[in-house]
Amino acid sequence: MSDFHAAMSLAIHQLYEALLDPAAFQPAIEAMSHAMGGRRVMLLNWNGVVSNAPDLVSTFAANGPSFDSFFEQYNSHYHPDDPAKHSWPAIAENDWLQYDGDQPSSDWSHSAFYQDFARGQQVHGWAVLKVAENRMNQQHWALTFIRDTGTAALDQQRLNAFAHQYGPHLRRSLLLRTQLTDLRVLVDAGLTALNACSLPLWLLEGRGAKIRFANEAALAHLRSPARLLQDRGGQLWLGPGAGRMASVQQRWQALMASDPSLIPRQADGLRLPTPEGGVAVLQCFPMPPAVTALAMWQRPIRMVVLHPGGFSPPDSGMRILKTVYGFTSAECRVAGLLLQDLTIAEIAERCKVQVGTVRYQVKSLLQKTSCRRQTELVSLLFRLHIFGVS
Image 1: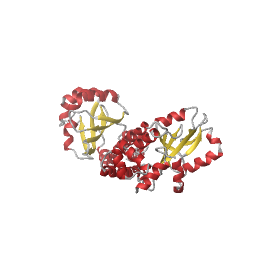
Image 2: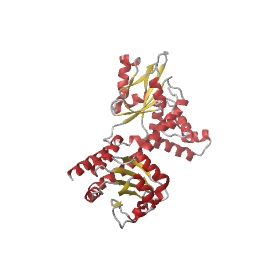
Image 3: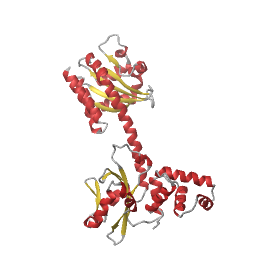
Image 4: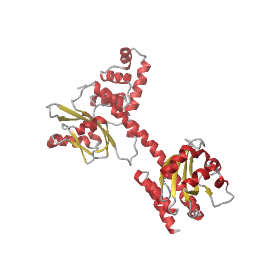
């Protein structure tokens, strides 16, 4: 069985590789097919309800008719009669559910499901592994190896070795894959919200300027002939015009530096001359608490925002506060009044609300910006020119 173990070791390695590189997932399914003697294989996801058809996650058709025809007929008509679905609750995780037309005592070989569907698809039997039963969202994973008409029966020794030696790895990798997929969906949804900001905005990773995300306005800016910034091999860099100026390059290096002592200078921004003779401003924003709480081993993430026409408060500043930090309209107003050096009581009087309401709003502003004291919040807003304070 050396060929079996070699193929399965490759399959498991590729399954874990697929957590970071999705392109490795399909080769892993193919390697499992080779391990079982070139069988057709299906990986299914199902909610456990007999009347509901399963989802086809991945297949590999080493022989026999196409899976398109097989699964189209199965899902459109035959799946409620599948004997495996009715026996499923009695099967434990990491156990096989087997059917074989060679077994005279088997009821399935005489059933309508076998006579009308399986034989027409040249299916003589199969083994279904209950890979995982996710009780949190009622999703089940099943791996099926198919025995085609005229081929030898499935090797029981290999099935047992598959379940006991490699089944736990398959289960673990699928659960991790699902969790990572859910996480990526949430992250993508959160980043998409940054498209609401009409100013060009980038998320940069590490000590350099590696682009991890660019909103729609940033992508449009990079495509513009009059762009002030450019994407150079995945790195954000000064555009052709500004990059030729030594003084601008020095300030750019200071803006991109990770030195904490340079943070105030980063927040004040970098002024770039525009082709029209005006001035644009590039700012490096402090990240919200959820991002700054990264583990020490993770590379730092920074947010860079370009004001193509210079600071144009309050509109652009309001959008940044709402989009990046999640400020409400009422919190934006309180923040602006704090910059006018008003007390909590004076803000309450100006806004015609209770003093306790303003205190609650200020507390919310501190939490959203990771500031510990009100003076830090005022300093942050002042340095970011959110409300056009000069």
